Image 1 (tube, one colour):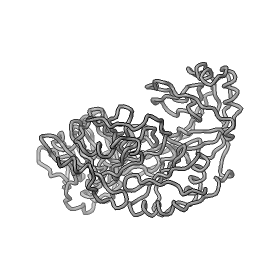
Image 2: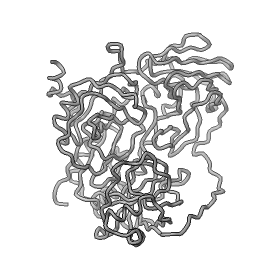
Image 3: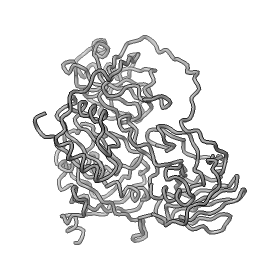
Length: 533
């Protein structure tokens, strides 16, 4: 590569590298996977970009400096493995897909099975691997559906653009469906859990019918700790999840970091009862009730809410002993959205990729706790001194009777796709829509105006990315975000403010504060001028 790569900051801890083609992306990805940069946490390949995430703003700055002169060799072919996928070509779009590229269905099937494919990158969902022809001369361009399906079945074999892929689980999708397979694309009990990794050689093999193989093996949880039922959930409220600090570093598998939406509150809850900061806690919306099955110590942090044990008031952030038979009650939030409950020793649940976090988008982790009467296990630990009282870390406030938050953000990486993108984003208070969830905050307000109507090839996404779909209304991705996306990102909320975003309920307001991408200092831009008027 003779030209220096274009490197764009993504929030405070990531960078996006624009590269000329997929071959360059795969070479960079191969070398940075083999020899990570200092502080590197995750690396996500896409069609023409590479997203690199780090552990701190300092590491991100150093990575950007190092990557300006980075010149990897071609990807090492000996690292690849051979993968065969049996396909019954019975897809609902087979005839239409063939027509769109000027082929008969039989010719399209022959092309698909005769082509040697290579795993290019993962994304969208765990085990969803984008494959491209090993020989670019064999590629064809398949148009996506005009209207995406709301539910594509698991095992669907599909084409879109230059890519072929298998949907590992039921999910929305706009690709053309040409067949089905029973080959499992994801198994969290093996390492690696994704069947196809970047660089793997893939061939699709036509079969007449599916052969189902029963798996009689015993699958064990990754995390086995001596435990006993410690609390019983008698009222789950609107939503109660098991969360910890997430599973960072698996973006190439299509797996987001997930974890507690407000990680400062989760850490504070654990500190109050003497746990490791990564211990599992309960994340709750709408209040909950827990009955103690044994004597233990609990703490509640997060949203401003009334908390009591058998009607005795409990201060947020303070540890309290609860005796067997007593009830811990957390009321609905007065300010903020999510409450966090810790128990001495932490909650014990089966882990996936080293974490017990519940990811609502991918379906990984424990299922939501929706029913009353569920017994929750806690780790058996020697009784010791618990933590001192800690301050509740909630950083949102009331403004005109509604919860309000300010989110600092860095422009881009695609702010040049908008007319006055940052000025328009930062010059108004946005309202959080009722359609928001752990995947992202959907905002309403004055739409952002696109400067042109091109299509953006899918590229890596981080928590905090402010994506703008065709309707012009921003979506701020939270912890359960997709790992790649095809809509332009006008700005990215810095990692240090994601906890604030996680505490904004529907109906609340948010104001974006622009930062200089190099110094992370607030800028005196047109945004501030309009804000003062």
